[in-house]
Structures are given as C-alpha cells and as structure tokens.
Amino acid sequence: MIIVGVDGSQTGLDATGWAAAEAAVRNVPLTVAHACPKWLCEESGDRYAEVGRWMREQAHTVLTEAEDRARREQPGISVESALLPGDPRTALIRVSERAELLVVGCRGIGGVRGLLVGSVAYGVAAHAATTVVLVPEPPTAPRDEVVVGADGSPGGARALGFAFREAELRGLRLRAVHAWAWPHPGGFEPADPQSERYEQRRLMDWLTVHRERHPDVEMVAEVVHGHPVEVLREAAVGAALLVVGSRGRGQVAGMILGSVSQAMLHHAPCPLAVVRPAADVTR
Image (cartoon, rainbow, N blue to C red):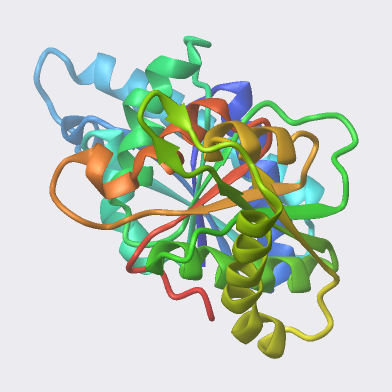
C-alpha cells in the first residue's frame, strides 16, 4: 500500500497524482490520508458541535478532491481515504508502519517551502517507518532518469536498492552519482586522476550486487569531485526522481537524516525519495 498525505493545497494534489502513478506501476492500493485534531473525529453535542461539523466537512472535501484526482489520473487503481486523528506528523509517521511508501508534498497552503519541510515533511522524512517521497511543484517534461546518491554507507546501499528497483519498475535509466572531495585544512583536496580512479573503483564495487539483481536496468555511473549537496542538486535537475539514504542513528532529526539528505529536503529540484532504515526496498 502507498499512503499520500494531503492538506488541501495544490502541492498535496500534485503529490496525490505522483502517488497514484506509483501505485499503478507497483500494482498496489493507494490510501489518501488527511490529519485533523482528535476532537474533530468524534461527534459532540457541546456548543462547538456546529464548528466541528463544518471542519469535518472541510476535511472530507480535501479527501474527496484528492481521491478524485487519483481516480481520474489512474482509473485502474484501488483508492480509499482515511481521516487521521492528531498532529499531521505524528499521524503520518504512525500509519507509515503499514505502507511500503509514504508520499507528501513539499509545500503547503502557506507556500513557504522551508517552513513545511521543517515541520510536516521534515518530520516524516526523519522518523517514518518506510521510504518517504517528497513531491515539489511538478517540473515540466522531466527526463526519463532516476538519480541516486552513492556513498558506500549502509544508508547509501539501501538507497541504491530502492533506486534500481524504481528504475526497473518505470523502465527508466539509472544515474548513480558519487560525489567525492577529500578535506584538508582550509578546504578540499584538488581533484587528481589517481584519486578519481580510486573513487570510480569504489563506486563500481558498490553497484555490483545491485546490477546483478537488476541486469535490465540501463545505468550510468558518475564520479564527480565536489560537495555532495551541490553535485546531487545539479545531477537531479529535471530528473524523474532523486533517491538518497538516511543514517538512522540517534534521536536528533539531523543525526537521523544526515547532512546530505537533510539538505536535499530543501534543495532537491525534483521528487525526492528518502530511504529510511526500516524500509524494505525489495517490496
């Protein structure tokens, strides 16, 4: 099952469209979810009952619009809706345990991307039990390519597994990007051919097991000297999807995500998949 969180914004509807297409590719059902205060989910006879009814109607309107969008764009998939009680972050993190993918928009009604990424989208990306895809405003004519950041870490390996499967499901080319820059006092070591060849060998080693599992995926392996955030942002311009891993250590959100994945939440130029440690990338 894929779950998409909606909030009544256009970006939420765009995220629904992305999630519906993904559900069609994976041949799984889609659940459209909207969170609201707990007291709204229960009828009451107090003086605020009329306000509660009006707010529930608005919540169901949000769900209906999203369901209609999903069914209109992907009429062959199974779609249902869910009204989740509680804070959106907590509610979506809770239901993510039942999903193979959780999808949210990167920008809400307020239109301030940093604010939303710092609250709902950032919260679920850091703590969800499954892979999270953040969908920004849709680019025009995205190129047929999945881009994935490779760094040799366990999180990077999970990201590679997800990216290979995604490229295979969609029939897209995979671009595996390894950014390297060895630090030294005052900056980074300048690029040199010997170091670049060493990094190229490392990248090919990381890719070997995934290429064996997905032999039909067309792949480009790219080693770039530079900071990972800048390299990935440039590589992902116009891509269908950018995939990064997350560290999964500690209790602080920055430690959980890692500096690169945390930065890409704010700077990714295309839909971004953050592969969580608990995610099963083989599903």
